[in-house]
Structure formats: C-alpha cells, structure tokens
Image (cartoon, rainbow, N blue to C red; front, side):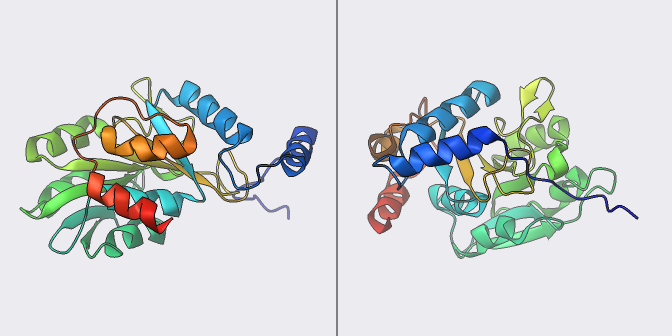
Length: 232
C-alpha cells in the first residue's frame, strides 16, 4: 500500500544554482543578497510591514517573547495542541504558559476556553493557525482588544493562508513563520519574525540587516532588544 506522506519537500535545478552562487560569494553568514531577496518576496506576498529572517520558527518565537518582555508573574495563553516551541518560548522567559483546549473542528484555540482562562496576569495569547487553518479571529481579536491582551501568531503552517482576504500573520502585534521541510515553503530549517509595527529600538536590527520594520510599535522594548543584540 502506498503511504500518504505528511509532506514532501520539493527541489528544482534553481535551488542548486542558488546554493552554488551563495557558496561562491563572500557572504556565508546571512544578510546577503538572498536574504534581501527572500525577505522582499515574502513581504510583497504577505503584506507584512516588516520582518526578520531567523534560523528557525523556534528562534522567532523566543525573540517575540523577549520583545514583549515576558517574565515571572506573566501568563500567556497557548493551545494545548502545538509544537513545544510555542510553549517553551514563554517558559524560557520565566512566564507561565496557560494551556487551553482546542476546537476539534479546526485544532485551533477554542475561543470560549480562552475567555475562561484570562486573568489579571494574562499578557498575551500565542495562537497557532494549525495546518494553515486560521483560528477564529472574528471572535478572538475583539476578546483580546477588550482585555488589553496582545496577540502573537504562530503561523508556522500558514504561509499563503488568509482570513477575510488578509494574510495570516498580519493580525497580531508579532507573528512567526517556519521554513522547516514540512512546511509550504521549505529550506530545511528557517523562520522569520514579522511585526505589524515597530519603534526606534529596532534601528539596531535595521542597521545590521538592512531590513525595515515599518511604523512605531508601543509593545516592543528597547531594553530587551539591546540585551538580545549584545548576546548575538
């Protein structure tokens, strides 16, 4: 019996040509011409104001938790059905992941369970668009807006996915993507962090990468970003 594969990475002659060009260049560490081309291609297709390519979606999730300055005493609502990185990114900061059940029809966060889990300590919701199927944003976004809670979209599966004509990953204050070989666009490993808005504290990232993050973001911390860059 033939097996139905979960995913099948595709490769064409172009990939080999591009790899040869990268190896023949003086830029092996990233932030070269292919980084710029890939970033612009993705921005054009998603409509995101700005983004930063990362080594993996896990790194992007950890960076999102850093930029939101999550820490002890904070709670972050996450789906109970997800890859561990959604939760470990929160736990690494000392914050408390609060796991809530998923809707069996979509395998995404059950918005009713999210409402029940909100407390005065809830800082953010890390919502996964599982399999490229959107969480119920019509209900989730008003709920979080009323409570003053931030949305981070774990859109690892969702490149090319839309909600009401708008690309997934452009609704939250931050969002992540994955280029793991099980995803719609794959390069073995890789990810990106996209921001709906930004603020001057992102200037250092812009200077290092040549990427631009758009307008001011009141939720991104200058101190956290400085600490992150000093460690890199």
